[in-house]
Length: 163
Image (cartoon, rainbow, N blue to C red; front, side):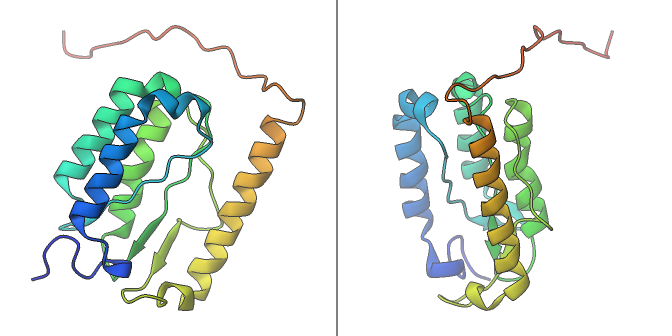
């Protein structure tokens, strides 16, 4: 059984991925100026590894106001399975933080294990190009007049169904 990081495209080591996420935490003050947030996360038993998921959730919980209205897109690259669960999990924070989610012609998933194999997934690469074009189009529309005209948000009204 492969350990975390083994068999990932480009053999991304968990320590390197963790260091990138910790670096993103350190740069939380810069999120309000960011156009994109790039995340590297390894999977564990079909979805994101627990420690990575915890870190992502804490980032969005503690600094979610800095990413409101910023377009986002999750991309998953995997050897075989688990991509749809990881893709769904990566998209959830975007939806909870009022971030427009950029879509494509299909789920933003590419398959390949060894370096260069993902480029052979022709449908996956077309999906990535379509997603990139959609992101560029949306950013141009948002910033067309120099100053974005963001929607007015209602104040959050929490509701607990357990009485």
